Amino acid sequence: MPDGSKWSYDTERNSVGWYNNEKQYYASARLQNSEVASGLLSISALRERLSTLPDFGGQDFTAARLITRGKFSFTYGFVEVRAKMPCSLGTWPAIWMLGTGGKWPDDGEIDLMEQRGGSAADKAEVLGTVHTAAFNWSGGSMGVAKGATRPLPTACTEFHNYQLNWTPDKLEIGVNGVVYSTVLNPKLTNAAQNYQQWPFDKPQYLLLNLAMGGDLGGAIPAGFSRDTLQVDHVRVYANQ
Image (cartoon, rainbow, N blue to C red):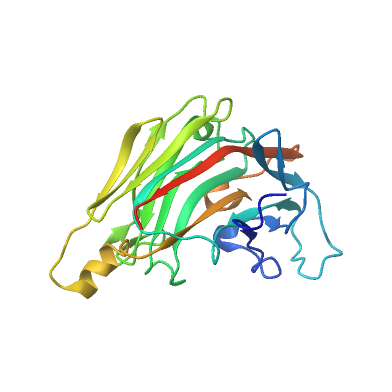
């Protein structure tokens, strides 16, 4: 199993269903869904129904969502996650961070990497996105989430380094040393207004997950049976 001193499992919405119309049940400490072997972490999504479990919510798929909440968080630094994406349509892998304050989107979200699953073209690119109270998924007071897309034709056939450089002045999201998405601290004189755009002066924790379907995962093919997000390493060089 993944190292329990660093990672735990987020299962809190299994019984009621996960956000963004996702279709998976997130299993806790189950080798079929999260296994470390030969130096690699495999987070696997399977077509199966765990209907005997008490928090089962009717899902036709299982997967895992690993988090460092309550075990490790940091403010500012450099993050690198070396990973290989699943190739199957309908899969939605993510490497991301959330503010420890627990209020979304006010406390911020940093998506080092997301990959959509609606088409073959989706599997040939990755996304780097930042959410705040002013700019978020559902359209904040000032608009939608800030981010960019990066072509990466070998995302699901080769390992790549997904990176974040986080300073008091900016967030830089990149792949293999190339920055493609940058968000700047506006440094407004009104602290409350600045926090709506830049809540990134407080600790965040890490998440690794593989969702099925949903708003970015797209339609799940009838023939889907199993696919895996593989992670070679997660490295954090924290300034605080």
